[in-house]
Length: 73
Ligand code: SF4
Image (spheres, rainbow, N blue to C red):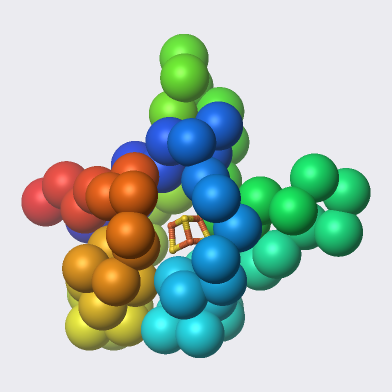
């Protein structure tokens, strides 16, 4: 599955980091989170992740208050 992440809209609340620290880390540089293993495609950061991460990344997507994390199957 694939994670799509609209980083420029991140408000730096840290909720996704708490749910899936293997995938999101907070940047000290700009206070937004970083998608670990992600690459920028257009305006979105994308990462391919295995099924074993499904539960935690879906949790991260659901707690994001600005809804900028999308999981594509
Ligand atoms: S939960 Fe959403 S707004 Fe909060 S740090 Fe993560 S991506 Fe950014």
